Image 1: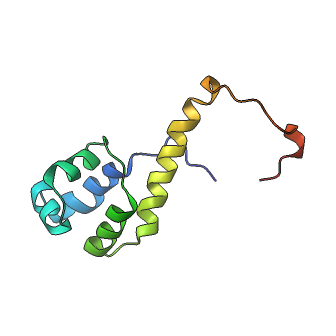
Image 2: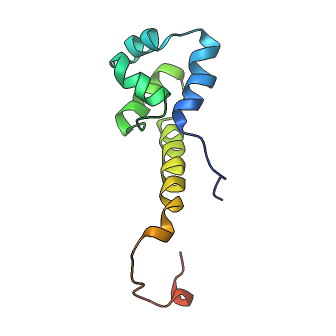
Length: 100
């Protein structure tokens, strides 16, 4: 089931992981082994959580990498669906034959 307008996972990272622990972006970036700029871009919803970052987050916060990637995938798909009407695609098979 698709979530309605899912948040960017950076929002959850800030609200559910960084803020409760009182961590600054600088402190968290150091612990994650990434630059402050990289983590800031994610937290400020300007960059995606990559598979490598998902693994780093899973280690740091005792979560699963799959959960981080799932959040990112849901967000990305929602954003792509917003532009569906602008895509110029020719259906190759009748819509009634599609079973996904």
